[in-house]
Amino acid sequence: MRVLTISGSRRINSSNSVLLESFRDVVRGSAEVLPFKGLADLPHFDPDVDDDTMDFEVVEFRELVNSVDLVYFSTPEYIHAMPAVLKNGLEWLVGDSRFYQKRVVILQTNNTSMFASRSLREVLLTMSARVIDRASQVIPLAGNRTTVEEVLSNSSWRELLKKSFDEAVRDYLNIEGS
Ligand SMILES: Cc1cc2nc3c(=O)[nH]c(=O)nc-3n(C[C@H](O)[C@H](O)[C@H](O)COP(=O)(O)O)c2cc1C
Image (cartoon, rainbow, N blue to C red; front, side, top):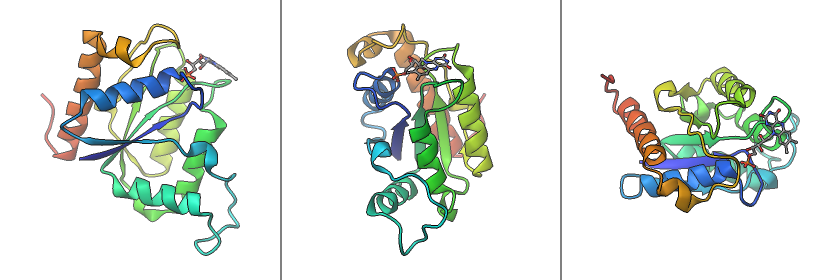
């Protein structure tokens, strides 16, 4: 199984990126996890751009998304919304029919910033993605300074990440959860 992870944060020690990196460690051996680091390199979305005039970065991003079985998102909330850099990336996927029914999971690093995750879910549903709610977990990291080592040494966080992936696989294999 190939999984792309997309963090909505550009911050070097981002808790959302840490969570997705930890996810990669937890599922190592069961899935190939590719972290997407290029959100900030995408140009501002422009509806006048077509397939012939599209920047290489956008073409590459679309191909990468198309090549995976699953996309994992984790995003901070900025002013009660997802960061513009993430919304911009999603806007570039709107014209790509291959995104239809793409399996996606939304992780969240705290249970207070609800606006961004809810709006991300709404945006993804509007784009006809298949949001796997049972795999979409809140993993309440302690603030935004948590390290990968701390996440991996916390058995309940590890368990939540594992459970999320198990649910995503179950959805992929079309098995009903118990
Ligand atoms: C510009 C800006 C706006 C923010 N707005 C909100 C907000 O509306 N609600 C909220 O809960 N947190 C808000 N925050 C806090 C971030 O969501 C929080 O620090 C998050 O953990 C950052 O994620 P990261 O560690 O992945 O960078 C804001 C932070 C910044 C920099």
